[in-house]
Image 1 (cartoon, rainbow, N blue to C red):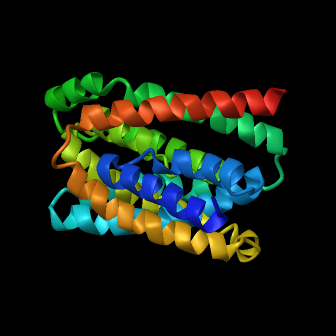
Image 2: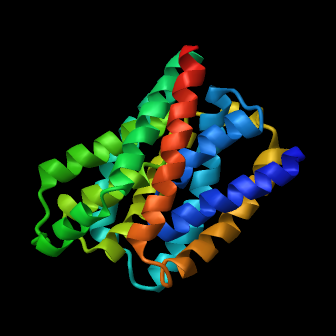
Length: 252
């Protein structure tokens, strides 16, 4: 299969995850860029940020039209992560490739565990009071920003449960609002990677983004037809396999 075809297939899967689940797609983008398209880990994190930013903004528009984005609370949550995302993004370029790979494998495994526990998130959503705890929200937002800057992931797989448990959002609002957080963090991290972005293979990144954007629209429609927990379980299994492969590759 050619690089173009691989980019289109991988982009469609990433967009599908982001559109349907509000997160998880970026965790697939990085390994796809590394193992399918031959990017280095550092280049893959930069490329993933570009892909995730474009795709998240598209998915955010779709969820906003459906009334699933809480702009005020989401902006406050995202604001706490902007500085960490930019600062850590600048430092990440100097880390050893193996360290980035191992760290990413660990995060992918954590994402899979989160996705395999949708019932817990749903229970938290039903019991949430809706009260905002500023300190907890700021801490969670800063943590997500750090993750975005370091590994080139939007952090939606952590933003959704954080918005549910910390801010008491119902699941639909958490998914939509997480896309606002992802977009803000990814843009902040990209500001420190302008030079690296210029050297990327845009013949691959461009089609990847296009397929991801189309996939995000399909994912939004898919989320209305198939239950969230079922979608999450499918992606969780894929992520566990990806995490195991990356960990073995990094330590051998």
